Length: 256
Image (tube, rainbow, N blue to C red; front, side, top):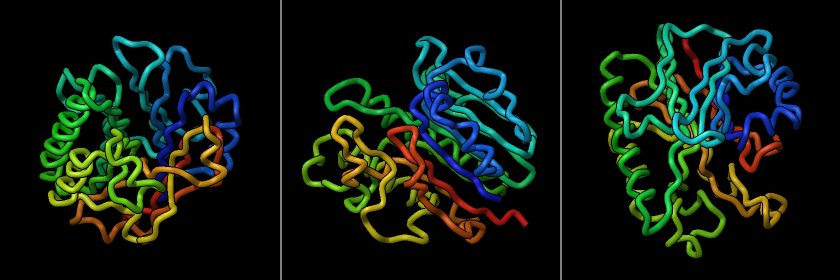
């Protein structure tokens, strides 16, 4: 099974740039998208009902054109739920959880943080709520797969200029420590199972032409629970796919 994740930076914007043609060519078994910035009712039928896929959507309840996630899946899940089960952290439409016979897939657009503001506190609390939910789902014994825009570069090799960004949200020690905590609690960064090198990024600042110079950050991840890490056969970054300030990332999962 080939599963992709992409922060599209506006699903309606990326649709105009050939998103559906790309989806039809790529044919992932599952595609998770983040930062959709739209309610389902605002989307064209072709996006909501693309040939060969079931789709599921979550949007911000109070702020239109903000946040939002979606799932395109060839296999119909047993159930799909919105949120992490905590009202404070579920109003922004950041989480979809799709449960299959043998797998639970979390598609999450984690909050951004701003130093010295309540948003950084909110982001860190969101991280903790997420980890508690993961620990609860592990009891089912299924593959736990988490994908999305984590909004933090974990280690120095995950961004091109670590020293210059050490006081910037997205690379703060306190943010990175939360990702360390995830790993200590049994989540595995799938990309680092196969690639230990720097220079591999998933987000670039469009205003400065950073993508052409590959001055970027790795903000988009797939995590798997440690008990099922052997099910991950490959993890990759599709750096040549354009249309957003992020590029897609993906994994191949053996569900046999």
